[in-house]
Length: 248
Image (tube, rainbow, N blue to C red; front, side):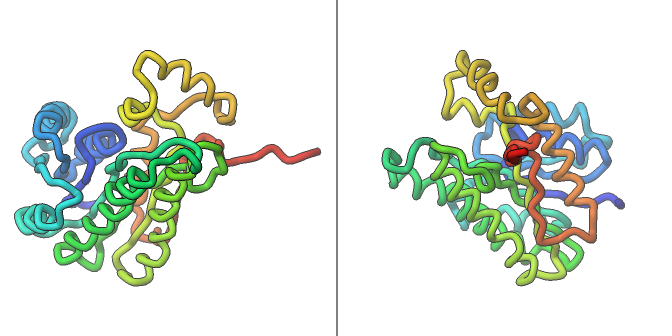
């Protein structure tokens, strides 16, 4: 694929940063966007060591909940070939009867609505050959007690994909649906010292027998960016966690 300009929102950590490393190493111009200036600086330092062309990597701060900031961001960036939105949102874990519904509304705002807002802001800068790749989560496709809020938010992201693929055609719209991935997102729900035990408890339900690394999700995001014949697709990358054994 010729050198392209790829904007990765949520590109300063986790899956987004892994995606930026991969695409920058392939020689693309990559812009990573995040809210935290210190984390952005750290991410840019790391990307400089991986990029085929360090001068083609840049970073910007923007808040996904602020449309004016996103409009200013894309006005400053100019033409964009591919938009990747990996921002994970706030999360909302627990059984539905116990959920704080205000927090659930915030979870929708910081993931689903934020992604829609980013797409709206980016559209004037995207060409007909462009693509948009979103990140949902396996909770949207797996019935797991305690994840009703997460499932609702990520399900909303996934159901957006096929309709947008038709509305925005020929711009391509796809999503990746990761399972359990070892990223800083878990700091929000499990104390760091308990994470190993939490992962061990989850591994038994994952056919491949381990949790994913961010690079494994990034590899599939890069596939969707590169492959000009894929649209309206949600790809599960969950180690088979969505699969249920069938009776003999």
